[in-house]
Length: 365
Image (cartoon, rainbow, N blue to C red; front, side, top):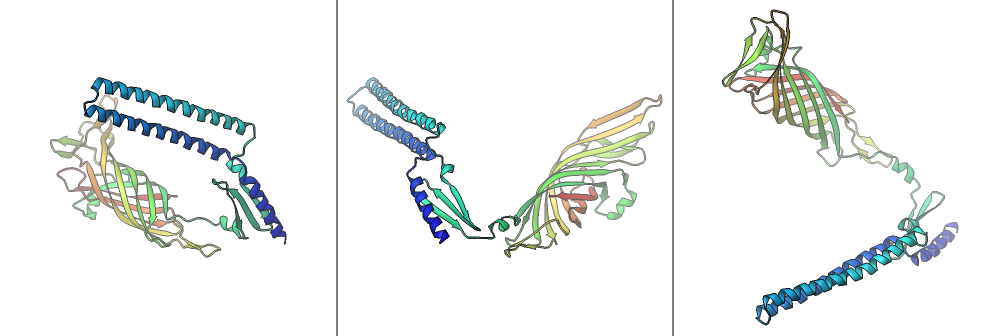
């Protein structure tokens, strides 16, 4: 009985609200009237111009007379638009003043929410001056709103670092006699990825893609530096000065793509909805990348015989291939994983030397 009486009160309220002027609706009416005025005057002008053109084509009037008549018609209708639109602008100014004085309601003022116990009643007046009542009898509405929403696509910030070196002819054993220092040749990667679940329903298979910037550093052994001779890049030994620093750095922008298996367990909400969670368990990704080099530099530091410290920065491409592509993979737990990346194309032109990187990778949601 209590609810019935309350509904009757709401119906009476709807009737009262439906008779009110609504600020947004009145503004919309004025806007439509201005559009209508402009359209009518423009259509009328087009008709007049067409008739003048017909008389000109028939030789009844001269070009000078036709131009004069067209200008006269355009001026007339422009003035009509200005006069009629000005009237609507005055109405709009009056409407704004009434809104400022509180004599006219806004759309949000016509929306009311009432509650009896755990039942919610929402009253609104639509744009056609008709009242409507929307009732929600869901007693667990608040608790359901607190349930987390699961998205099919998420994003991660990627940071990776580790050691960098080269392989000869794809042979892993060539690392044993590499001419680059293993623990002092580093790489750093910063990037952004998007992780999209392949199936529409919760699963453990994802497609991962993004953009990364790489800083690869190679430090030669035995007091060597890189030297360009024509289309070849050689490692040569400095005889007269001992190098305290010899480092070749090349910066790349790459577009990685991976297929990832994420073993994180799904979560079931109170209403039975199953949502997937990512980066909560073991993960394994395999894929590749393609990109290009942004620049290459060689850093040299040494002392001359007289003890003068010298620092050199040499700018050159050192015959490196501009475009690079390769394979990459990672395996880890939650956001941390071991990461390996291998270039399939040679690092330098006319060589079989290929860059390989091994390190730690962080994928942060």
